Length: 272
Length: 322
Image (cartoon, rainbow over all chains, first blue to last red):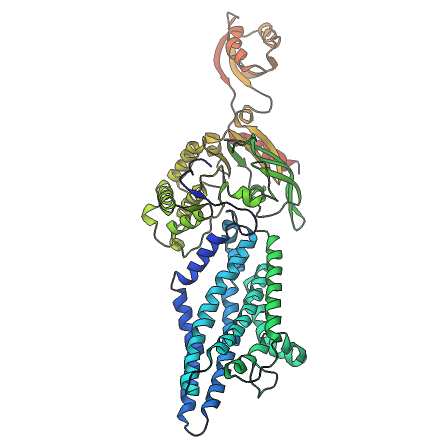
């Protein structure tokens, strides 16, 4: 290259080529624009707003419920909203991440630069994962911790178990994220990606009814319990109660890795 | 590192089929270093397919190719680190400004220093006349402005090979003129491979040309050879009062391949002399004719085809045979 002696040239071969630059841009898309504020308002409003209103309403019925019952309800509401409704948001966010770029032509443009296909997929994975975990798990979770502790129980809940519950809910969202990412590499149609993504999320309850063994496999087992009156895994963690099976977490992690591997494999062969 | 290859792009039997439809068939292409290579063909000829194959955006169904003597399949990322590419319809991230787009592009090639990158970005913005819109989101850019931004981003890394897919599309005549001037200026630094429909532009700047139709290469070579026609250099004369004896003398010259005489009316004869040595023809042909005292030469010129004629002949001839 003529004329580039004033620059420090990026070197390196293999899958990580272009990752740093593309990931920086992807993260800037989340945190360098108003996107973060929009998401923060949506998720804090949805998760913590509803949680707060519910717990304050319950506490007004003085004598009818105990603080522990209020905290238990809070833990369940937080688990379902963070693990289930936020997962719907994840599918909506991710449906365009790969397909949108394929259809608009930006994927072809950016891959005409020294960017490996693996780096493209991993950027979409990790860039969005950072945004999802911060805006949908970390910040709403910390606020929920304060609400459930102070409005619900009237004292501070143990923090580390609550943090572990947040991590488990993060697994549920990453499952939804990687599943949608994989669909994005398999299809060239937004409708197919969002349709299959949401159908799977909504269909989990039916699947576990048909085959109860799936409670231990699907992420629904993280934020709901097979026994309707028993606390879910995350609620049990928050409340310090005996834990149901941890298998949905391990399955969630394993399947997420599988989805990423399939996505990487498929995108290598994608024609742009 | 000194490059030892003489051809920046070499393909051998490069083929591509989409769902059973052959888009490119056995393409053997050789693009000399530091050439301005015009890649011509009607819509659907396979030009963009060829470019995408060279950039690794799609994979060949058969054959292969090398760019900078590196394999287009195995070394795609390395190849792209030395290429600048303008897509036929440039698409960028619409929330970014032109400056951010160029800085992002430069980031794939350069780690720093940030000041040098910022200077290079500014230089590119000025080069394509986008400095006043540099900090606006490109969402509202016109087709011409996107094209200019596309040209800027293709050059930001000082590429050894600039691939331009229809670079003058969406540009007004001034913009087209600027592009051609820019290509001339870059010739000493880089090889330019560009596809276009605008044959006048190709004739102005290209030194090597390939013509593609229906996925098949119809012609490849220096533009001078192409414009000279398939029968080699030809001189045409319009004459009055030239005898058959002089015609025989002309035919007997070692540098004359053929002489065709047609009646042009009003006692005039039209000669078409195909030669092997144009310099000998320029020096001797007129003298031979005028050795006849009665002879008068009304017109004498070397036949030169316009690229459009050559292109139309080839493409129509090819289509006619299908």
